[in-house]
Image 1 (tube, rainbow, N blue to C red):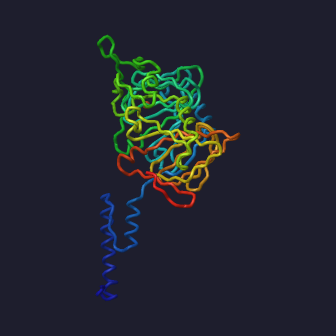
Image 2 (image 1 turned 30 degrees about the vertical axis):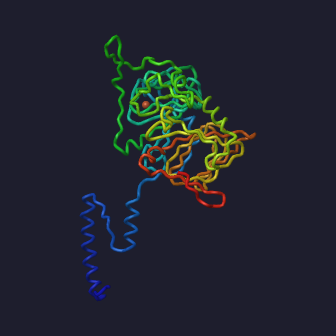
Image 3 (image 1 turned 60 degrees about the horizontal axis):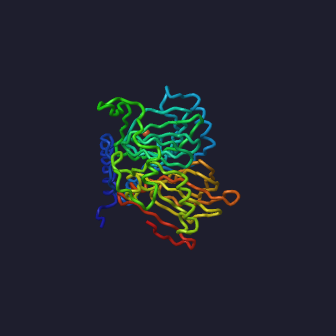
Length: 387
Ligand SMILES: [Fe+2]
């Protein structure tokens, strides 16, 4: 109960306000956030400020806009200038950060004919997805992988790898890294200057890795779902990411085809996850990847999750609705769906064809921290928890 007379309260409020202002001036100079409140309005404001951060927003990058810039970069920049020619998709609402979502970034990369960049390794996990050309090249821990459209290549954290192009034609690929997440954890490092190999018992500095495995090693050993090889070592790289370094498109496409007759839950069309074949779990602790097929005319029901997605169109045309806002897409366009938005996909491929999306997600990071949630909205408006 307030026992202070109104005139006394007014005097107290004047002094009190002056002292509070002086206190706030001191705390701000000391880089302190005053997390308190003196009434319900400031309580609300304080909590709002505490939750404030630069949140990625949905955005689409159209390949038709990006390709001429990539090709121009291919003309202007050679391997002597730079080991890489990549255009990273930067989310317009992340204040200049090099990030597509808060945790991941994706880039288009062009490799000119017959170039192989020096071997390097780094703490962020990365993948490459072939888009054009059949001679994209990545050597990973001594396995030489030449890849084409739809092939997925892993370069797990701390594995030595070389990127390049083994052929005469141009080759474009998509890369996805968990670097914004690794940066947030202040755990990013790169090493490129001292790749060494054993030669006659001596350690010799090398730019390009020698082949220590046959080119089809990953497929030969791990490409038989449901059959677990027990006579070879799975200790590749640091041993805590998938030892299968390439997932060939032909197999993925065939697996999608085999699932065609099964309707699924209506929220995710036909969905395949690329997994570590030795555990059945996501290939990385931070990221996972999916091939998603929308059958002719298929439209998914609304789905919302707190994982952030980067979606690249492999086949077909259509549109997606993100919180009702429409994003039209065609092959090789990339759009991001930060966590928290309702998402629907619509296949509008002419002639009744499929649409196939390649989806990168930070779901394993959220799962590891027990934050992961996924909900669907049924046609009657009811919400169903999916994870
Ligand atoms: Fe790399």
